[in-house]
Image (cartoon, rainbow, N blue to C red):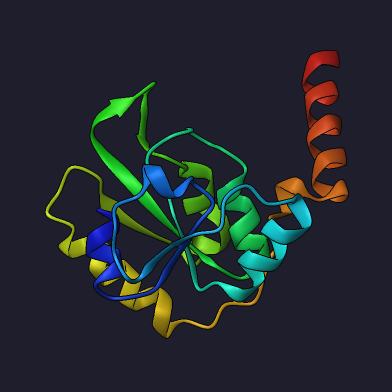
Length: 147
């Protein structure tokens, strides 16, 4: 999969070099600090989901930084999820994600890479993750519980 993406774009990974395929467009920078991670996302056009972890924070980190999340979908659901990050796909009507079939031939993945490279997205924090959204959810929970 990574070689397919690297045929269309340079890739930077925090995975150890020994875990990555050898390709001139793939670079490992190893473990980085949260600040370096945020800076990397601000410079990036996309973040590729690898299928695990489900609902991890990196997809939202990317969207907050204005990077598109390439969201893998599964032929057979994992823990009742059809994609790695269904929440990310709901943000701004899916404008910040592009879905590709993880077990496919990766043509749709290459289409997602081209879409991300052609897009200029401003970062956004989903309402559900703001203080106002949090308070709204808490009020809703207690209103339902008390009635």
